[in-house]
Image 1 (cartoon, helix red, strand yellow):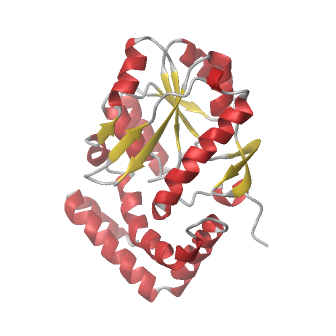
Image 2 (cartoon, helix red, strand yellow):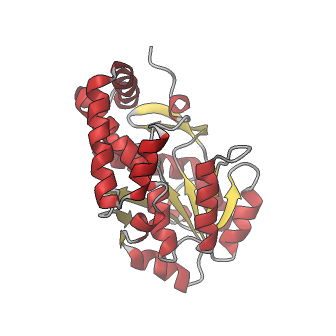
Image 3 (cartoon, one colour):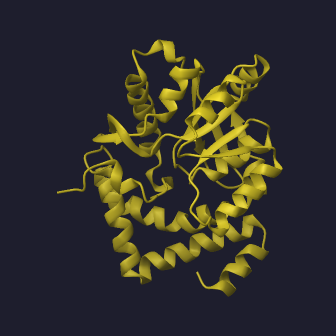
Length: 273
């Protein structure tokens, strides 16, 4: 998007900006064959072998229409901060009990809006994330916003012991589930290898895992908090990871057009033959 258009969008309220960006997305789908082909290829790869594979064309179009609005929401923390948290007593109860929790996210709605809502309402103590070196302008924005809300940011690489210490202090530690790793599982109905970090942290600390799921990004954002999953209910970290992958797959397949096509996506599965 050209800088002048971006500045115009940023200057107007979200209830005006988001429909503007959706209109730009519709034009992109019609007038930019390369953008259309790229979105179709990504959606085909993601939905290959799933029940939603026949809907690839329709969902690819919806993803293009929604993508600029989702990106804009990463800069508009105040819009997401007012989101409705369904199941908030679960997190409040864990905090009141002084118990830590591994709160796991997927890249539905690009993660940031759901984190904004939870952080603004006091349910994020620690966020584990990947930062570029040097950080991008957007990553610096996240850092400013979240630290102002009292969130401790820890790098994903090399911080296992620090995250574990936060959990043992009773912190609510938020971390992404859908990143490549070494644990064999099934993700979106395809063999994949996910990082074992969230489950390994739960087993090492005894803290439960709490999956969260966003819906309706924008002024109507909702974040659903699932029931805690005690690690003792699973044979090992791999079994817990597989269960989390099943839950996440169902959530993503319910709204694949909202799933961020992040750079790791191609590495979760083998390339299509």
